[in-house]
Length: 226
Ligand code: HEM
Image 1 (cartoon, rainbow, N blue to C red):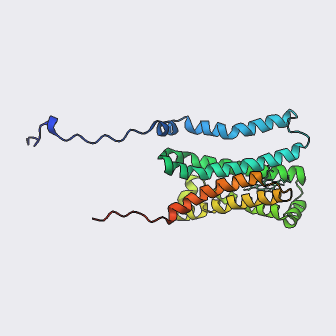
Image 2 (image 1 turned 180 degrees about the vertical axis):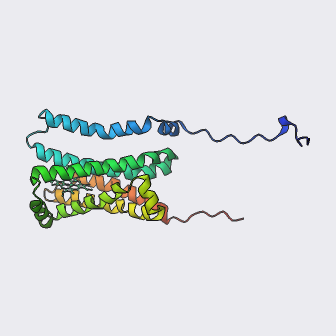
């Protein structure tokens, strides 16, 4: 039997893996996803409650359509904030939440469209198509909405496998076009009322989120020589 070269006490200890930060542990907790889901759906429950208790003001349909539009844009911003936040903080477990947040954006967009189609257009397809052709801000919103559908439909593991990682990633890059079209849709709608304050806030947030990615993609990478 061969004897160890070093006595056990003198053998170099294997380096212990770095302990995940408290935030990482929180994000990896089994309750993290259900909590984020509830946070995402809480506002929806509140607006449904308001709708059934006469809490939507003098023009409930308009309030509902606009509120759902606001939620769509907010959720898109939150989804786009995951990657920069992850890169800035090192909280890599945030990536686990991105798919759910993206689906939340699509959920609010579909409801936004359905509320418009129902309350503004009585679900008459010809009227909806006429409106899309007549009002540029509706056309732009529809383009953003349509582009969101393939992303929602391919956000499941089987679709990722079927498409292959490269094609899936290329497809999901349309989220940048979607958020810009959503912003243009909002800007165009508010331009009619010369009311740009909120649009400017969203534009600032979106510029920061996309600017961060552009900066990361274009900065020279450090190469270790030797
Ligand atoms: C990604 C897709 C979309 C986003 C991000 C979005 C976002 C928004 C936002 C932020 C508003 C303004 C809310 C406010 O004034 O507080 C809005 C209003 C509106 N959107 Fe969208 N929207 C999208 C898709 C659509 C689609 C597909 C339609 C219909 C075909 C649509 C129709 C409308 C209408 C009718 C209004 C209200 C206009 C008014 O009250 O004068 N949107 N949307």
